[in-house]
Image 1 (cartoon, rainbow over the protein chains, first blue to last red):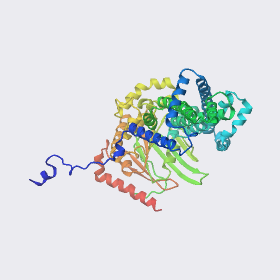
Image 2 (image 1 turned 60 degrees about the vertical axis):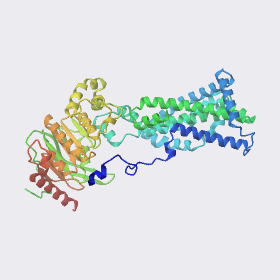
Image 3 (image 1 turned 45 degrees about the vertical axis):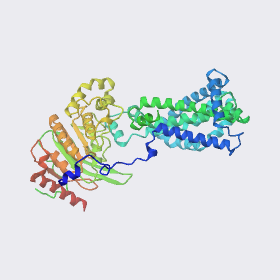
Image 4 (image 1 turned 90 degrees about the vertical axis):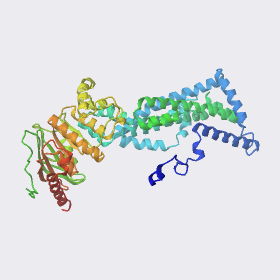
Length: 288
Length: 270
């Protein structure tokens, strides 16, 4: 045998082929890994319940919770009192979100596009944003009463800041070259805004919207905790005061669908509008 | 031949109607107390290709911004086709180091953007046919409806060339247009640029810090001093056209490069 043949000849044997090692854990498919993690979590939960690491009064078993999830689900599907509560909270969330988007966008324009806004308005916004906004809830209740309006106001108030920040950041996203290019084209301020700054800022704007979508639910529920009413937050508060912990758990789970739904809606719209933004597209593909 | 002209230099471009003229242009940034340009005289003859070469921070970009009407000079006159430049103009085409295509527009929509901004959507739609021809000219036939994310760096710069040409500018101002590309692509794009300029009889000014690039493309190379930027030498490049990359290895090319390099080196240690 000549030398070159010795190097390459014959079938590749395990000793000559160098394979990349992938650990066993990394080879588990994503969905399976998620399910395994969930099972592990439920086992720990069950153990904590069975061995009374935490009092059974305040920590229900997974099974009790599951039963209650089915019960509440039936109530929702058959149009029971929980559905009307969920509808009220949904309204609060939707209205709060729309108001937050509208006002947030306008303030974002003011702060991001005008020198006056950036210099005079921005410092106040930063100061207000630093406040614990939930603490304003009693004020909204006394101003707007115990109805839906005070919850909408709190939800919008909490959710408006990420929209402002997202819009303003988006307006600053265009780089020096792009601005210079538009100037060489004799572009007016309005044209530069509409044809350059707003489109290029869309990814920032939408990440602001996503944060707002999560926060607006927080605002609505906290508003209900503190200001009463007939929403889902009230159901949670009542169930908690009766130490009906399985109910609290499953109400929270259903409530989270509300936030998730809004988040997905924003993501869906984002994908339509910002189809050209690589990260956006990748991220949404990953998310769905 | 190797005159150590340190004061003003006679413009020695190829004969032709002067298109762009700078007379004693100076620029001082009062706020930063920077004297960027000092009495620049420059004439671009019709159909000529001129390069300005200098090290970073010598005021090349400032010069180009003044010529593009993006910035007023502190002193001196700037005239394009006999009319003073008082702001951005349709008859000035400009190109930057980055292609700066907008990712939500297809290649052809990026090309007609200057028309859309200046004359509105209808005019932009009417310019599509012309844009198709331009994309064909730069070798991008079939890529008209592709989004920039699917274009390579060189292709993106070709689209930027078309965008610059769509308004049929009288003068092209090129700010290191291919310096962000890899060297192989860059050489190739320079040859493409030459072809396009020759085909359209374009008047162009290139600002660069690559000596080889300046020599292979230009009829006349101005060497710029350190701040405050002045032209210390004008080197006429009498290589025949069309130029080819092979010329880079001939002795005449080497001599020109050396002459410019020594002038630049002298400047660097002043």
